[in-house]
Picture 1 (tube, rainbow, N blue to C red):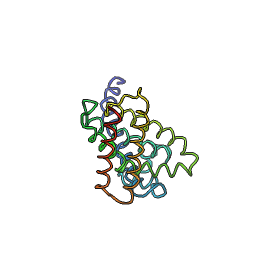
Picture 2 (picture 1 turned 60 degrees about the vertical axis):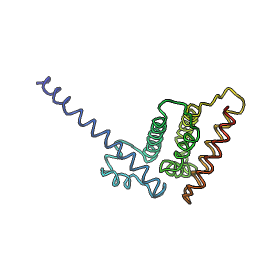
Picture 3 (picture 1 turned 180 degrees about the vertical axis):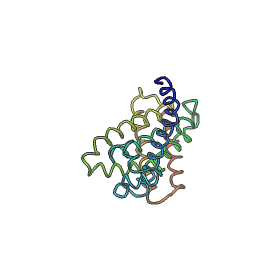
Picture 4 (picture 1 turned 90 degrees about the vertical axis):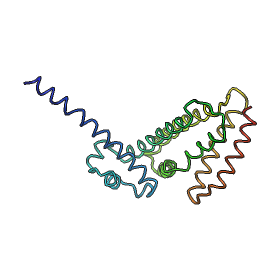
Length: 204
């Protein structure tokens, strides 16, 4: 009888695990969307659970605290965007540096950046949240920098190259902040073109 029960449990476990993963992903995506649209104050676990179509209890089963939910959500989408960026240039270093710069800028003009910005503001006021967000941002920043160096074919052993790449990412972040108020694509395109020209000289 014990053997029969184990086989039945095994048969039930796989779809249950699949459902659990799907629920977790819906919660993460809903949390990022809520944070981008409503900010920290308007993004409660209840609001996120409703948007994801799950109960509050199910949400708390996956993420015991609000802070755990939102740091996991931003990290999840950051990883998704890194994967998407790599997929644009599967061969690694690209011949067209302007295309790489444009893709990097796009990282800072979507809902991920908007959600992350709300999280940064919340972390500046929430002692419990700050260490998690600081650690997360440092990790995401290192990964983005590493991807940028790889895709641009930059040699960081040369003086000034590391700072040039970091300047590019700081510029992209600034364009992302400007985009929160007005979507000025024309201006953004001109800045990207200028940075491509500067980088082609700096990285020769």
